[in-house]
Image 1 (cartoon, each protein chain N blue to C red):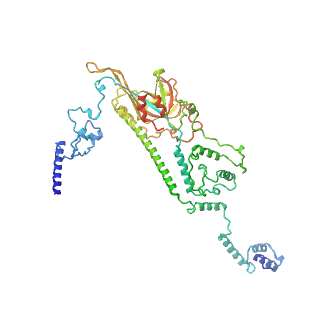
Image 2 (cartoon, chains in turn yellow, orange):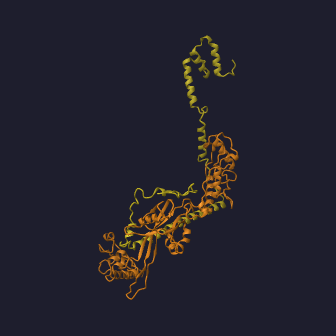
Image 3 (tube, rainbow over the protein chains, first blue to last red):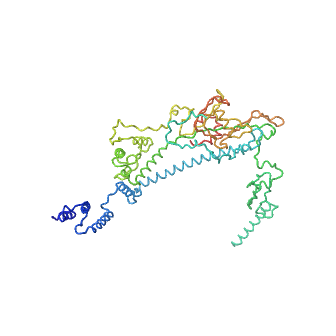
Length: 191
Length: 388
């Protein structure tokens, strides 16, 4: 036998040579087939052969190089590698003039926000003052009919139903959107 | 030397203090405090009368009258002056002469019925430019987009995305224009002056174009003439906008619309909000709801927000000049109109068979109201409107 043959083949060959062919039974066949996949089965007795096989299997399970991984897992691992802090781009680095421009843009934006906020608050103040003036006028008003002064004001200040189950109709909860629906307004609504 | 000066100064201070305290409250032993509000006073509300509040007097202020506390005013009412003048403001001089005449004012309740804006407002050029700027900065700061993670390799969706990515010159984001944060030109993240990249029209077009399906289910690219365009969103300016149909409610969708009605015919016609007199057994909000239903029909889904009026308008009564006895006769009653806030959610105004003599209606924005309403009327209600 040449030395270039694999050890298993060597074992197979030696066994085929050493044992008569007529000796084959089902048991013997299985042993032979097992022997195909083991390396040093020639010298070992049949009982010791199975032990060696088990060890071999355990080795294969533990070994990483031969194990096939699910490509989905590989994909996810790659993704997490991209998302790792080492791969995330660094904080913004800008040149001097670029940074000054950035600062200007930022200040302009803050100014714009402030302008909007103050406009909103001014509007709230206007509306509140309008309500206040109306309520004051109502407080100093007698009537309707024979009612005494301030009757309408007291009724207006009642909070009946404000904290009830249906204080605000649900149709009123309509957020503003960028483009209108196909039917922008339901003109044919009937009671 | 210095200590002498200080002691003299201190003595003077104490003398002044005692003198002022004796002046302010001669009956109380403690010159600093005056804490005797008479309980159960007629001029206080019941809650204030029950609680005894401590009012520190300023010892050196000679003008006790300049600091008017409600409670202190109530404790020492001078017997000469009438008690009603302290809490209730003086009645109008005209009506005080006529104590038994009918109420010179007719009380009315109106409703400012508004349709809230349906659309957000247009972004200003500065806002859209700033949003684009921030999106590009965000591209510089985030991890690269991995197509393999989101698309199954060589599936139709993957092929579709690859085609679109190539057309976008490799930029994964759809609405930031041509900018690669990881290339040699990563620094070049600002657009030039006059660029339309930041406008929302450009972004709409890009997003709509990007939403087209470019690859068939078999993975074959669809030629240009067979591509199905995506359904476009409705335009922000509607047909009623183009025609300037002021009676439609699908107009000026990014602004608030207010209902105004025309009363009378011809030259005497006056525009105003729906309003009507308050009955004796009614409150303002009930009148407002009733008047709205009577004048503009019931086929509107409305909601009267609260019971508190948001604006008021007063028309002064007219009197004849005073006669020999100093009495004036009422010629024309004045009006006090209180407006409540109403919102409309659906439906349309309908003036047929209205009980208030109305001939026309319009849904107008705030700026248009200004041109239509009488000047004093507008001036009274102008503060109750919203910004847009």
